[in-house]
Amino acid sequence: MTGEWRKLHNEELNDLYSSPNIVRVIKSRRMRWAGHVVRMGERRGVYMVLVGKHEGKRPLGRPRRRWEDNIKEDHQEVGCGGMDWILLYYIILYYIILYYIILYYIVLYYIILYYTLIYYYYNNYY
View (tube, rainbow, N blue to C red):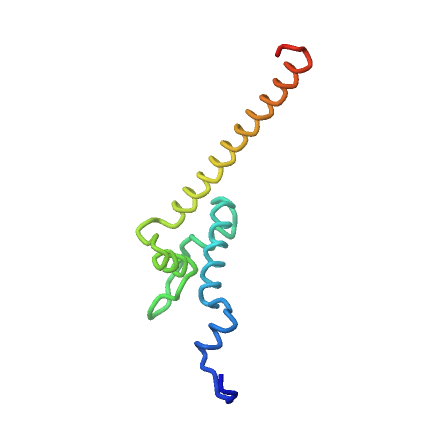
């Protein structure tokens, strides 16, 4: 630095303050919200609005952009574009449940081991 004043460009300001990319934040929150909606179930109103098809005559011109279209596009950008996004969230939910079941059995194993060692210690089986 020579002590001179100059204007900073947007890229330099972004690097300097490292603010998150607002588009990326919106897309990640939209995908997170879609995951919540999928976990709610098919009978909930929010799910029906997100995935359901509307009945009646459609207006002239290009169809309007839907939330589902945005979510599919977000998944394509991430690299999961070939899969059905609802199926993808069910697979993720399955692995989360499987993780907690395995964690439960591991904790249960150590609890049983702990009480077995205490039992053997107090009954002088060593």
